[in-house]
Image (cartoon, rainbow, N blue to C red; front, side, top):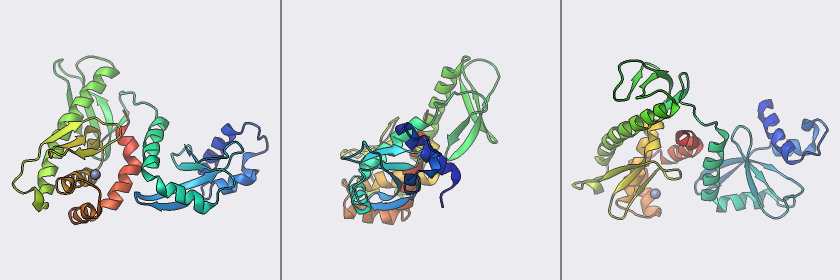
Length: 275
Ligand SMILES: [Zn+2]
């Protein structure tokens, strides 16, 4: 079912591209077509989208977002639904990358002021400026609040205190989870697995040929099961470096829920990367 808010959002988007339409936007015949959502199953998971046509788009697909972050495929008018679906199914990674970047742009930059919501392990905490003696910056979870005492006034100092705190928490949570998950991964037995953190814009984790696992510091904002899913994925790369059948067989043993976890991370990832 299409809710009115969605319909308005999507129509507005068409309206900005087609400034010449003057009649009430919902009476346009393409409005109905626009909002009919289709789901294509790609090797990287299910991808819901809506289709729009514009007179000037005549040769290739364009990707856009509606105001609520849904994927809009602007396709040449003569392209059939099957052709659009097949084209999307061939380019899942390109679309996933587009969605993360474009959805991030929809979000207003964080202000690092009291009352703002900040994520930690999947929970949104309210930022509270804490008083107290000057000295080192301090961040602590107190009830539903994230209490920050920066070293100096101003949003930059709050941001830097939070960034350092996230990194420290990530180091301790990720190491503990990696040790716990590795117990169920016999191929890691007896080996020490170096873990490094890095702030990345496009990757949640990677595993080098030397067996060093790098995880994205921003992942500490995701729920623990998503953190676990990324760690399980990288641990499997210690045994299988590519994404072949053997890799996914290994991963299914370690995390049977990997498909749902990956879909969740793809849908929410832009929120965790938001700064
Ligand atoms: Zn991988």
